[in-house]
Image (cartoon, rainbow, N blue to C red; front, side, top):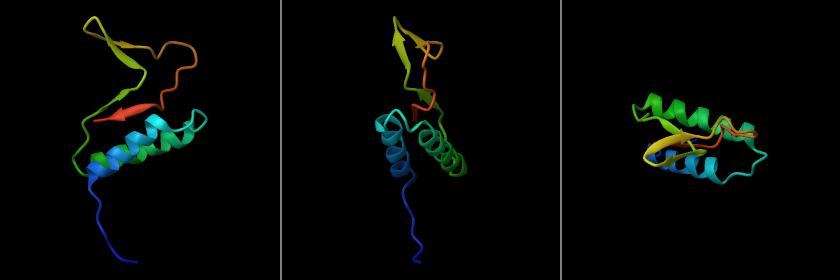
Length: 79
């Protein structure tokens, strides 16, 4: 098998796209993707945190809607 490299930014973009666009039923797959991405970002010194996609800015304040019923914390965006 040939050894190759991939740009970490490309991995981050691909994972964020999946975390945003995947079917609602794929919670476990999103959590696995998020865990893998977090490990890659940490190992390469590129981890800058994440935000839940259920958060929004309202009147200049970050409002976390995680307390509402049916919240899915697997929907994330990594910076």
